[in-house]
Image 1: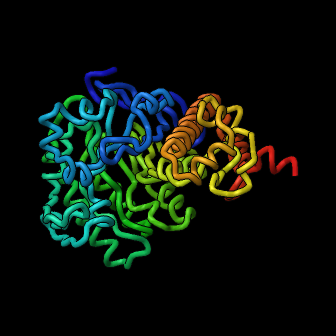
Image 2: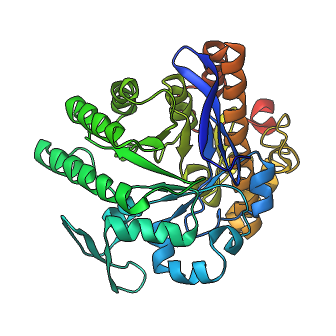
Length: 383
């Protein structure tokens, strides 16, 4: 552990790199996948399970926590770490994306965003300063600037307006955050699909000297090729000495592709959300436990997995739990999915150190298959 926030690169393989973020609450090994704990919980998981899988940091969300239970209440109860029994690093999203996507009504102007809560319809105002205040009340170790995230595809005018507004908000967040030893504020590169805007955004944020830099406004429905092109555009303009975070991404294939292009941090609701809806992520690909083909299959999801949810329960039993709507099914599949994601990141970190990333990435993709929708178990192999 460190009393300050530091980042060091410990290995490279081409553009990919592995390293460590050190801060008072612990070390984050990169490339890192951050399980999403939006409302102070990684859904269907105990905190101890999340840590045991290898997660060094989880994500919380300003928008959801300011609405319920309230940032001031969390602060009065000892902060988010104590509140959710997670004594390790926490990154909080600024709430900007959720304001744009979830609020019933919203008005964006220079000062910030006025919106109606999707919970009870109450009116709230989220400014850059208030976002930083909320993240401070929560006690987040890594905080994000407030930005405007436009949905792609967007008009050139909307894309440029949102990017420039996000830059002005970044300056205000930087001032509001000040200097907080052991904690970090990240800037967010915006600019949609426009290379010139992305470069301008990255350069301006680097001039503001954030502790880390995120690439935002992707994973919002655009093709993977567009996402990768934007990563390739932005990464050369970001400091090699600071962490790079690709927000809201993604599928295992997205993670592998982004790591090879120099990204250090990721978050996505995909593994937990999929687990609650009967879908498992494994080294063989995606397995839909709702499918009748699994009803008589005694095989586990993956006998080689270190996770009991993946190696000790039959597909037939998991199918039964899913079809019956049993909570245990959601818990087991979420556990298995997060285990797969953490194991994937561990394998990528090792491959970078060993300079075998190309071979390991190819093997991962070969096992996964091109967009495989299901994977065979014993019942299928015997038929």
